[in-house]
Each structure stands twice: as structure tokens, then as C-alpha cells.
Image (tube, rainbow, N blue to C red):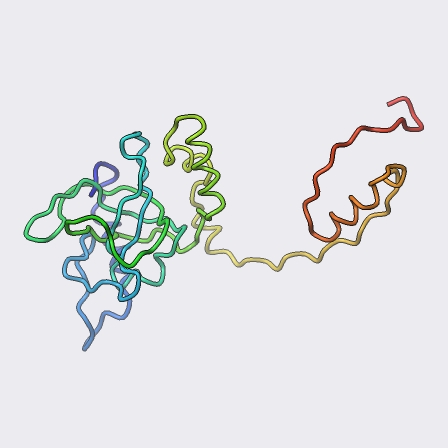
Length: 216
């Protein structure tokens, strides 16, 4: 499976080679970069369902890809991947086509596709950025406005920042102390509203401002 996108051979091959783990003497040989030809597949949930970065409505669905064993740990739901789209099947293999970006939506045990699955080419980042909640929201927006899921996800998920991914994640600051009720105590449910916010809940309220001491 594939079609256009960058076809820069050198950098991509180096990136793929660096992602192959434990390929040394006495171990299974490395798969060829970009194709993972004859590479062993993941033993558990070897199929990844991928949302490809193609906005055409007739491609508004998920596509199944095989998960190479070397990418098993990183190819989690929500991560960015690179796949071959539009590859043809030759001799029991998927070859050709072009590289394109996408997101792993889920991992499953088997595919409904009757032919040979193309393998994932690369995990671009192990950070899961397309969460189930965000995916559900994007699907609802696409359906409501007759758009494609890939186009909505492209707007909803910020571009990748490799430097930020490498940076250490700071500890979250402590929860601030509850504020004094102040003017909220003049409202019948004002204190309860503040208590709900302080407890980490997400209360809903309809608020009509009472007259204050000043003209604003």
C-alpha cells in the first residue's frame, strides 16, 4: 500500500537501520530497510490498523499493515508511523508504492484483508499523540461536516516536535490551594461550584451575574 511523499533514500534507510534492535552475531538478520522483507512479525497482535495521511473521501477508512517484530514495542495505538501506500503484491510480497505518514489506531490479531499485508516501514515517534478520545472527536467532526477523518486529524494533532519529545518531562506542579469564595458566596450554588472545581470535577453551570458594588 502506498503512494507519493518523500522518497529520500539515504536518511530514511539510516533511520530504519537504527531502529532494528538486537541484530548482531547469532541473532536473526536485520530486515532490509524500508521493506522489512522476510523479517519476523510480531508474535502478539501482529496487525496494525493505520489511518493514512490521505484526505480523499474514498480512502476514509483504516488500512491493515503487518507489524515487524523489531517495531513491536513502539508500534502502539496513537503513534505516528510511516507506511507504504499503493504497493503491489508480487510473489507473496508487497512491493513498490510510495511512503506516507499515518497513525496506528489499533493492534489486532488478524486482518480481514485476503492478500499479503505490507509491513510498517517505520515508527516515527513512540509518543502516542492520537488518543482514543481525540480520535472519537475527530470522527464526529468529520461525519458532521462531511469531511475525511485524515483531514480533521491533521488539524487536531500538532506537528511533531522531535526536540520536545527528547526533553525530560518535568514534574507537575502541586495543586494550588482552594481560593476564597469571595463574591461567589453571594450565589445560591456558588460554594458548591467552587467545591466541585477544587475536587477535580468538571461541573456545568448557567451563570447570570448579580449586580456588583460598582457599575461594571
